[in-house]
Length: 265
Image 1 (cartoon, rainbow, N blue to C red):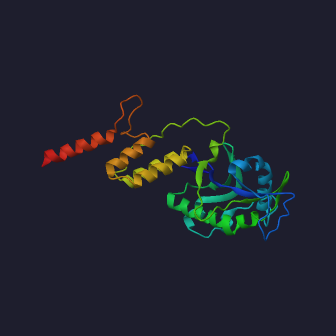
Image 2: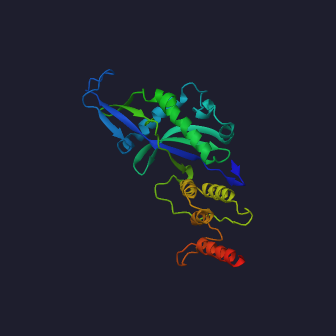
């Protein structure tokens, strides 16, 4: 999997997990709320990671060819661009800093743009609600002292966190260097510059920074402010070199252009 001769890393979409724990002596009744029921969140569920993952693996095997795990993209009927870019979407659980999350790992042919990613997240939310997740949350997961019923779906306002699978590590990864981007060649087109900057950040494993930059640029007041924001995330001709006094070069460039316009009047 390559884009511009760079390996495309798997992308993990993390969502909150919740569960109910029913003690062995609870006298659990599907029709009534059982006494002693405990409601658990991701931090509580971290201790059950291996057991829950085994049940996820079992769920992924239902209806699949032996040895092949469930691929949610087999049931995706949305945009052709998403279908072409996403080879596989596999559900699992991930422990991140002691919190257990639901996780759909994307194997990509090309990186998704913001609109495509939003569409895919909407689809995964639907799978967690009425498809894959609906079946899974009915599976009884035996644990010491009782059983769990685990929920991937957390309502319509499902919150996704995006990260590259390459950043899985027991220690925090050092903050990566800014990718370099030349403004020359974009003909001053801010949308072209933004798209290029976003792609370079994602290729370098900084998907969260790419989305943060995108949101800030969308809210920016003008062209120069947008350029200044982009230059904070990628190294451009306008970026402030390390050790220099802070103060965006783009402001000086803007002032220069204003003066030139004034002199030409």
